[in-house]
Image 1 (tube, rainbow, N blue to C red):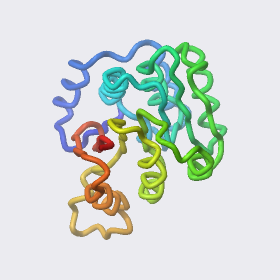
Image 2 (cartoon, rainbow, N blue to C red):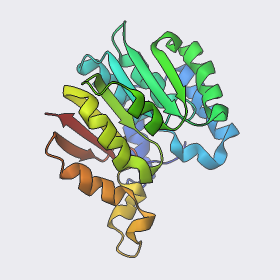
Image 3 (cartoon, helix red, strand yellow):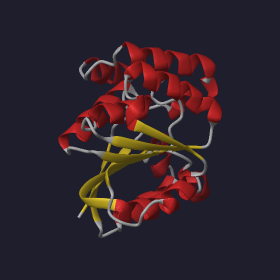
Image 4 (cartoon, rainbow, N blue to C red):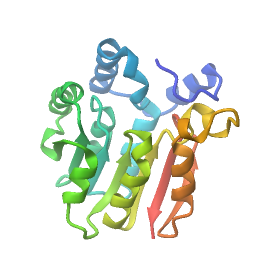
Amino acid sequence: MTRRSEWLPAELEDYVVAHSAAADDVLTSLAAETASSFPDEISMQIGPEQGAFMTILTRLIGARRAVEIGTFTGYSSICIARGLAADGKLICCDISEEWTSVARRYWQRAGVADRIELQLRPALQTLQALPAAETFDLAFIDADKGGYISYWEEVVPRMRPGGVILADNTLSSGRVIDPFIPDDRVPVRAFNLHAGADDRVELVLLPIGDGLTMARKK
């Protein structure tokens, strides 16, 4: 298993995973295929404990409408879609046909393909084409880190009051606190400051995976 919480001792990270809801055969197979087919990008996939957290959270808030910015091979989208209400819909934004072709196969295997709409173009184009009205119950941002602030500014106005935004990799493998790494190499620093100062939300940065910011629209 690829390590995602690098600040935890490996044994403790294994313990966290072992004592969280286990990934089923579909997610386990997807993780294995992703590791085999895209070894250089495997760190882009969330871990099983984060996936379990996202499914539970989606259910807890009764989400029916969700958007995901950055889909990769589909692990996180399956976790979100499984937590949606029976009539729920998830819009997935990505630019890679290669990665999302794997996602499409696994959406079918997981039985959630009918809940997912894939938009294969730059995410900002998809978001800006959506109605400006408060639409979404849940949003997950997990794409190019330099684009996080732009995605945030498109997503926040479209969240309903009480809706939840998740932003991944906001600890950047601990680089956020390394004084020897310049800000331009750790773009989530600027995002963390931007989101933290946004009075439209209340938020917390959780030490799950590579850092997961959770914000609630006021």
